[in-house]
Length: 45
View 1 (cartoon, rainbow, N blue to C red):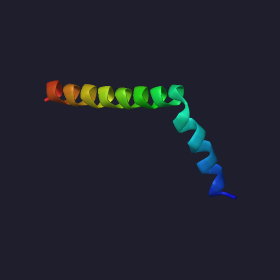
View 2: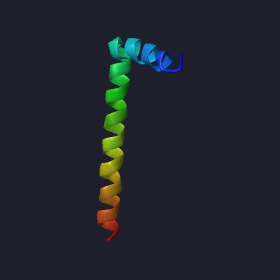
View 3: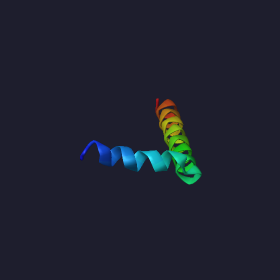
View 4: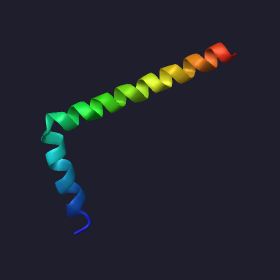
């Protein structure tokens, strides 16, 4: 039962374009945060 529950939740989410866009947006925010952190460290030194 516990193995079927995550699979049934992930399958429809992958087909939804909105979820795909949200994942892409989240990855973009993570990249921007990493760039901002490295830039702040660079200027901090």
